[in-house]
Image (cartoon, rainbow, N blue to C red; front, side, top):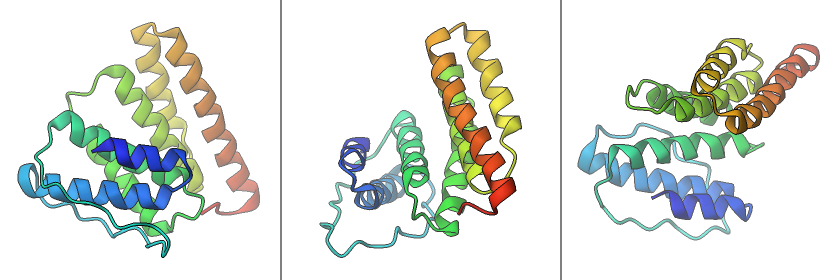
Length: 167
């Protein structure tokens, strides 16, 4: 489910990757979850249409696809306020899952911090929780990586305070 969306994003086709993930999640939801309620990504006239497989997905696949969809939305500088709101809902659904490993939860918390900062909101709370989780796990490599993203979230927030909304 994640492969096509992630691959397309790596070559700069973020919108097409998001559309493919939306289709895969809708198919998965029809089989294993409540329906996905998210506005479709604005179409790109040059992008090929998504394919549908109607295959059930595991909880891990579901969480991974939601996480990738929210991340791709964050990467999209043209994401609309509605798309950012949908990404926040995806992150909320992920963070509500009790089965997340601490490092995975920390990663999604940093993504939430980036989303908050992009919307001109203080990212301090999710960043503090992410730091605590990574510090408790003793993973210095991940701590260093997430600290860098955390500094970026904090810088985006500070910029938004001085230059207005970054959406």
